Length: 52
Image (cartoon, rainbow, N blue to C red; front, top):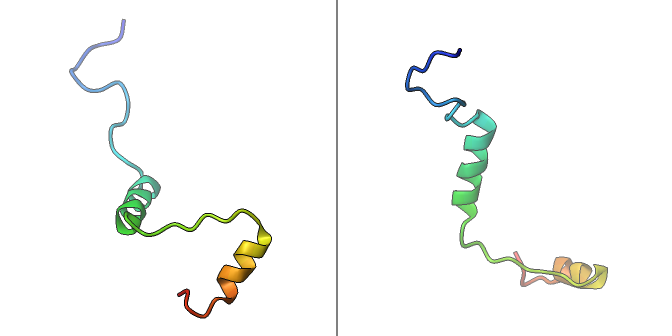
């Protein structure tokens, strides 16, 4: 029988990759998202001098 020591039965800490992902998500929260219907819309958006 396994001894119970009050610890969680899994690793509760995040990996470096998971921490980096969370930092990225927090840093980009609220960034406007443009959804494209087709390749022409993408090309038009990329060629628009007013888009940065």
